Amino acid sequence: MAIISGSRRVRRTPFSDGVEAAGVKGYTVYNHMLLPTMFESIEDDYHHLKNHVQVWDVSCERQVQVKGPDARRLIQFLTPRDLSGLREDRGMYIPVTDQGGGMLNDPVMLDAGPDTYWISIADSDFLLFVLAVAGTGGFDVEVIEPDVSPLAVQGPQADELMGRVFGGAVKGLRFFGCGRFEFEGFEYLISRSGYSKQGGFEIYVEGSERGMPLWNALFKAGEDLNVRAGGPNLIERIEGGLLSYGNDMTRENSPLECGLGRYVSDNQLDTCFGGRAMREEREAGSKQMIRPIAIDGDLPPCDRLWHVCAGGARVGQVTSAARSPDFGTNVAIGMLANTHWDAGTKIEVETQDGMHAAEVQAQFWI
Ligand code: THG
Image (tube, rainbow, N blue to C red; front, side, top):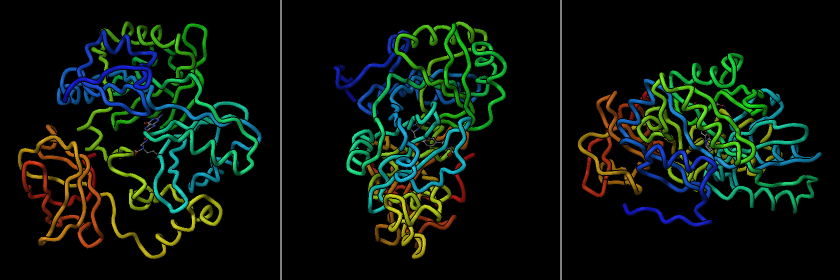
């Protein structure tokens, strides 16, 4: 593919200078912002992520800040996940749907202070939706995109590196736990989370001017750990079954079809947006579901939707696929009809280069 032309619409991030100095080789655009996807090669970055530690510019995980007396009530209206367990020291993954139960976004939400929540969004114009619901629903809230840019530290040496920069206490965070930790006189909100299965943290950097000093400090402190710049890795996230909104799921899909049923709470379905549709689907059973799929042969890049066929009929689609060095097969994420979603089912995948034999897996490669 050709290079991306920069402009104010395709926004730079507070870390873009560092990303460029580190030799970024590939970008995608996410929430109208640059997201680095490749430094050495997808495979080299993959091995490095699994063995060392990487610093990721995930500024494109923009925050929708909802603040005010009705903030909590508004967010509970927007998600089917029961938020009664929300604590200020824990983030929560919350699916959000339209009125018909179609996925609009799958963000992470955090308590960012008194009556203030940050919704760390996937790639859809979620701010517009929240603004409209808040305004027409009479919720007493202010909705903005604050100057906050997540910086992720991922990989087996993430604890060591973060401890060096923010102090050892940060290593005490549990999965999705969060707290404030100091660096150069400012307290950063940090959570143990991130878009990989290798473990790590996300630092919510408030104030663009703080971006490069923190970036540089992490690289300096991690020199002997072989720290590198990285980004969400295609192969690693498919192995781990991490879904990408807009790609593996869209408004065409419900949270249940996406395998996110554990975040759809029965006690919210009478009151939340899209609840009736989700209840009906839960009672009737889903017609299709996200499944892990192993595909044979040499694959072209999965840069479009691939049809899945069986016995001459279409039974689903594959939306992410890559060769996995560690598992010696092509790993893939697909949406399969209930007639063909059982583990062990043989299917065929139609790529731009032809048909490939494939098999439904019992679980992702974790
Ligand atoms: N971190 C932050 N914001 C984000 C993402 C992130 N916004 C965009 C995108 N990623 C949102 N999508 C996801 C998808 C999966 C997860 C987080 C955000 C995730 N899932 C855990 C898993 O599948 O293992 C389970 C989470 C749970 O059980 O609560 O981490 O990565 N800030």
